[in-house]
Length: 323
Ligand code: GZL
Image (cartoon, rainbow, N blue to C red; front, top):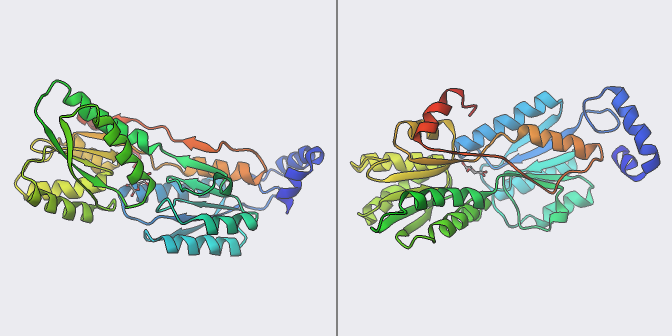
């Protein structure tokens, strides 16, 4: 209610905001109460996710924001149930990383009807953008493009066919759809670069290993693995070694994320290239929550800044890597 007062009465709002500021509350809920943020997390499927969860929890503490956190174990129905529970608890802001792109319209409309602003982090949805305030996260198409472009540059003078197998992320998730799109767009510029098989490893190490074992049995001529995240690449790396082949040499490995274990494999020469996808979204999420709660405006799309690593860069970056 107080929040609406600030946004609806332009003339008075300045005084009210000043009052809040004078009140010294570091939260933005106008009344000086602590902001409550309900957050539904995808799960704990990868090193990236673990680092993302830690970033959100640490940043909430630092920002003095009360965090109600729910782990959906990669099930959309659990995320929808969590969001409904946040609505019932009348949290100030709802944040979530949608496990898949579709199926969110109904619950987002319920949040809107309850006048609770929603922030998307990490992954996008195909719902009407008026149903959420902002989407904070990486450009996955660009990440896929960077991975593909590295291969194009590496093989630009070659004439031999380069056989690629692709381990895709969770079926129907924004990173899986968009990384595949960006990667295949980039390698399409060189007809020698061919994806001979592409299958989901659900972003997990175990599944990545299992799928790679099957691919190694079915294809004796694999030159490159492109995995949509480090964890599937690490699982596949084990399968490659167990098949008596050298990862990084017999089969080159390109992945996305740049979590510590992936960077170690890169520094050890078992991976060849990693495109960074930063999980450290916590501080930005808390800033957004405070701005929204204080009736401020927020950009509709906030793209996280990230880089790429080759083997030399990984060796240099590892000692100070935050995740
Ligand atoms: C990307 C994120 C992906 C990571 C995976 O922002 O959604 O999900 O790349 C994680 O490691 O499981």
